[in-house]
Length: 98
Length: 202
Image (cartoon, rainbow over all chains, first blue to last red; front, side, top):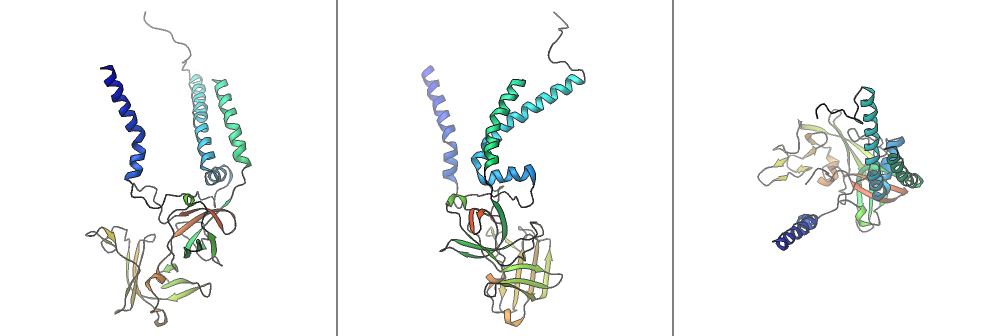
């Protein structure tokens, strides 16, 4: 019973891993989608960000992956500060009933 | 919490520095007037306005870029066309003349003008075959040219001066909009066919 379950799980995981390959194979082919970010009117951080995309998709991906949790933590800390400011205390709790 | 944030920012710092040190290229965009598949070059008229809603294809000379050396950096090969502008208010069409390497403004006599025609309208789309009708269309008997502009949602049929009647339908067509990323003039590092790229298409 346990072996059967393991085999089923292995089949499911293999199918999941192969799903993108099957999707690619099912496609009609043709030219790949190539994107160039339009930086002609951009300045400052927006221009830098779009230029980074044009220069290297890898750098862009790495930076995005790192920045998403950093921004998440910054927003979390800000929310914490605001809640503390308006009187919501999440750091300690008093149980009403025992 | 503060330590975690500090560690994350420290982790991001080298990548930010690395990205800041990269020598970035430039972006150019315009309407294709010639494609040489043997020499692997594309020639286009730069959009001076930098506005896709109201482009201004008046920059001369035409710019030629070599295809990217990496095939993965090249989208669909653009279609060339010579029509730069269709102005129904002034009743004129501006064509690019590759021999003169200049623009030519042609006065036209409008026979029919249909506005607000989107891509699925029966006048431009054949539902039975599921295919868009072919434009520009020449009617040799009536000596008219019919042009459909998807951007302007306009279907126009007009008469042209006698000396232009022999021009093929392709001459009245507009080329694909292309966008290139480059560092060295004339050498595209990446080429996007803006007209044919639909990121929402499944």
